[in-house]
Amino acid sequence: MPANLAIAKATSTLPIVTASGADPVGFGLVKSLSHPGGNVTGLTNFAEELASKQIDLMRELLPGLARLAALVNVANPLHVPQWRETQAAATQAAIALVPFELRSADQLEEAFAKFSRERADALLIPPDVTFTTHRRRIANLALGARLPTTFFIRQSTEDGGLMSYGPNPVENYRRAATYVDKILKGARPGDLPIERPTKIELVINLKTAKALGIEIPPSLLARADEVIE
Image (tube, rainbow, N blue to C red; front, side, top):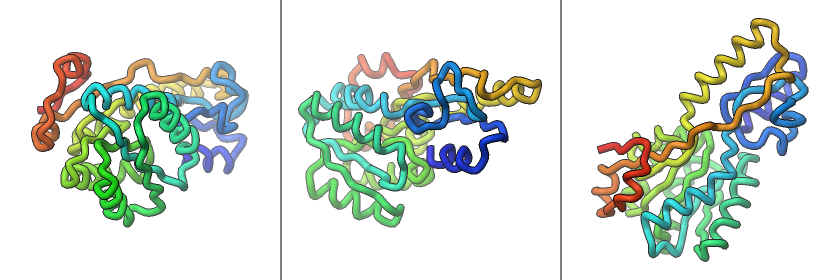
């Protein structure tokens, strides 16, 4: 999302096709999803609306979940609505949040020391470029801290996270290419409706579950789009 905002600020004439990002209306990138109206169109993942479902999945996995750790990148504007949604969902579920406001990847060890100190039961990692870049490191730190994790993108689960729940970014980029094709053929970005994800994927890593000593409920496995063994 920060990249989308920066690019949109840099030009109001060149067509911009997004493949991800939060609410483009709320962040002022477009007038509406159905009629963007300017030079920006593409796809959005509406990440902030997925936090409550991610917490529901974690509660299904860990019925005794009481304290949920969360990484928060204070430099990412997406995390304002994302964190607000997470707080609301946690309050609804009577779960205490243990947040760590990260300003640099150098603070990751400090974050996990806090999570262990405050006896967090699990960890939620929201969508963020920093967290995606360091997903393997985060997964390894979580494993060392015995913390079950829920990420946003499937690649994080492939790299050792326990679960991920979110749109498939590869599919989003494929769909974004169809927008580029239409624009190159003469369509105006402002006339192309912005798409929301049509499919949200649940991916579970059984190797990580085994390493954590967690048994995944059959009901959760049955709903998974992919199980990594």
